[in-house]
Length: 100
Picture 1 (cartoon, rainbow, N blue to C red):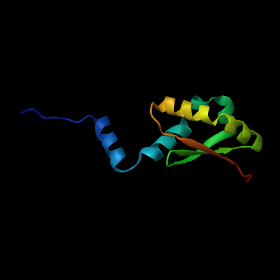
Picture 2 (cartoon, one colour; picture 1 turned 120 degrees about the vertical axis):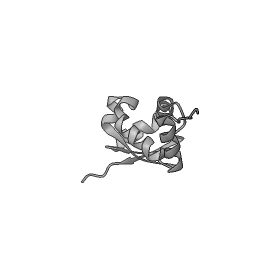
Picture 3 (cartoon, rainbow, N blue to C red; picture 1 turned 180 degrees about the horizontal axis):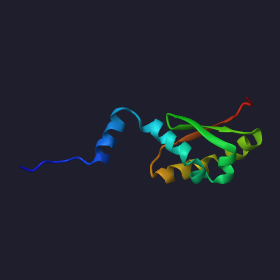
Picture 4 (spheres, helix red, strand yellow; picture 1 turned 180 degrees about the vertical axis):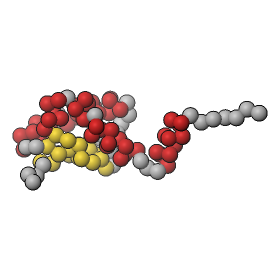
Protein backbone atom coordinates (compact mmCIF):
# COMPACT_ATOMS: atom_id res chain seq x y z
CA UNK A 1 0.00 0.00 0.00
CA UNK A 2 1.43 3.34 -1.04
CA UNK A 3 0.84 6.30 1.24
CA UNK A 4 0.92 9.86 0.03
CA UNK A 5 2.69 12.21 2.38
CA UNK A 6 2.43 15.98 2.19
CA UNK A 7 5.63 17.85 2.81
CA UNK A 8 5.88 19.84 6.03
CA UNK A 9 6.23 23.02 3.97
CA UNK A 10 3.01 22.24 2.10
CA UNK A 11 1.13 21.58 5.34
CA UNK A 12 2.45 24.79 6.90
CA UNK A 13 1.59 26.84 3.82
CA UNK A 14 -1.96 25.49 3.84
CA UNK A 15 -2.32 26.25 7.56
CA UNK A 16 -0.95 29.78 7.10
CA UNK A 17 -3.48 30.47 4.33
CA UNK A 18 -6.37 28.86 6.23
CA UNK A 19 -5.67 30.89 9.39
CA UNK A 20 -5.01 34.15 7.47
CA UNK A 21 -1.50 34.40 8.92
CA UNK A 22 0.11 35.53 5.65
CA UNK A 23 0.05 39.26 6.43
CA UNK A 24 1.29 38.99 10.04
CA UNK A 25 4.07 36.64 8.97
CA UNK A 26 5.01 38.91 6.04
CA UNK A 27 5.19 41.88 8.41
CA UNK A 28 7.34 40.04 10.94
CA UNK A 29 9.71 38.92 8.19
CA UNK A 30 9.77 42.46 6.77
CA UNK A 31 10.63 43.89 10.19
CA UNK A 32 13.36 41.33 10.73
CA UNK A 33 14.91 41.85 7.29
CA UNK A 34 14.20 45.59 6.90
CA UNK A 35 17.84 46.69 6.72
CA UNK A 36 18.71 43.90 4.29
CA UNK A 37 15.79 44.86 2.04
CA UNK A 38 15.99 48.68 1.97
CA UNK A 39 19.59 49.26 2.97
CA UNK A 40 21.31 50.52 6.09
CA UNK A 41 20.69 54.24 5.51
CA UNK A 42 16.92 53.99 5.02
CA UNK A 43 16.58 51.40 7.80
CA UNK A 44 18.38 53.70 10.21
CA UNK A 45 15.59 56.29 9.81
CA UNK A 46 12.49 54.14 9.25
CA UNK A 47 10.71 51.01 10.41
CA UNK A 48 7.67 49.12 9.10
CA UNK A 49 4.83 49.08 11.64
CA UNK A 50 1.94 47.25 9.98
CA UNK A 51 0.42 46.05 6.73
CA UNK A 52 -3.26 46.30 5.89
CA UNK A 53 -4.82 45.63 2.49
CA UNK A 54 -1.36 45.54 0.88
CA UNK A 55 -0.62 48.99 2.31
CA UNK A 56 2.58 49.25 4.31
CA UNK A 57 2.75 51.79 7.11
CA UNK A 58 6.24 52.98 7.96
CA UNK A 59 7.34 55.06 10.91
CA UNK A 60 10.12 57.55 10.17
CA UNK A 61 12.24 59.53 12.59
CA UNK A 62 11.85 63.00 11.04
CA UNK A 63 9.84 65.06 8.54
CA UNK A 64 12.94 65.29 6.36
CA UNK A 65 13.11 61.50 6.05
CA UNK A 66 9.38 61.30 5.47
CA UNK A 67 9.74 63.62 2.47
CA UNK A 68 12.79 61.76 1.19
CA UNK A 69 11.02 58.40 1.37
CA UNK A 70 7.90 59.76 -0.30
CA UNK A 71 10.08 60.44 -3.35
CA UNK A 72 11.44 56.89 -3.17
CA UNK A 73 8.09 55.22 -2.47
CA UNK A 74 7.62 53.47 -5.83
CA UNK A 75 11.19 52.20 -5.75
CA UNK A 76 10.75 50.86 -2.20
CA UNK A 77 7.53 49.06 -3.20
CA UNK A 78 9.35 47.45 -6.14
CA UNK A 79 12.31 46.43 -3.96
CA UNK A 80 10.03 44.82 -1.34
CA UNK A 81 7.89 42.97 -3.88
CA UNK A 82 10.97 41.77 -5.79
CA UNK A 83 12.54 40.59 -2.54
CA UNK A 84 9.47 38.47 -1.73
CA UNK A 85 8.95 37.49 -5.38
CA UNK A 86 5.27 38.42 -5.14
CA UNK A 87 3.15 41.50 -4.65
CA UNK A 88 2.73 41.99 -0.93
CA UNK A 89 2.72 45.82 -1.05
CA UNK A 90 0.76 48.16 -3.34
CA UNK A 91 1.19 51.42 -1.44
CA UNK A 92 3.19 52.92 1.42
CA UNK A 93 2.22 55.51 3.99
CA UNK A 94 4.73 57.32 6.20
CA UNK A 95 4.18 58.56 9.73
CA UNK A 96 6.62 60.56 11.78
CA UNK A 97 7.54 58.82 15.01
CA UNK A 98 6.40 60.67 18.09
CA UNK A 99 8.97 61.39 20.75
CA UNK A 100 8.39 59.52 24.00
